[in-house]
Image (cartoon, rainbow, N blue to C red):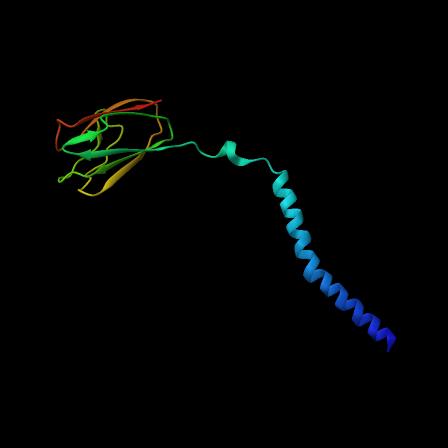
Length: 129
């Protein structure tokens, strides 16, 4: 009987240790591993979102300077549809209806003049460094 009691006691003790101590040990080693990893802040993207509002038949801001990899969003807050069309054909939004927007992730350096194909008097310049 004492052999049975010892075996049962041993199994209960092992089960208790596995149930209580193992998760704590795993959490502890994961925490240490996380602390030992290099900080990823240096690899976090520094890309920015720039917004150009289209209102009163104008691109507001008419000239915008951005970095390669940044995103430019044109938001049409005017009462009619517009486009954002590069003069050199580098990009073209197609029709941006009232209340809609169009985004461009810039991938190439340069200076890009653009206009609205519906309203050629609307002009803008995107400078990408």
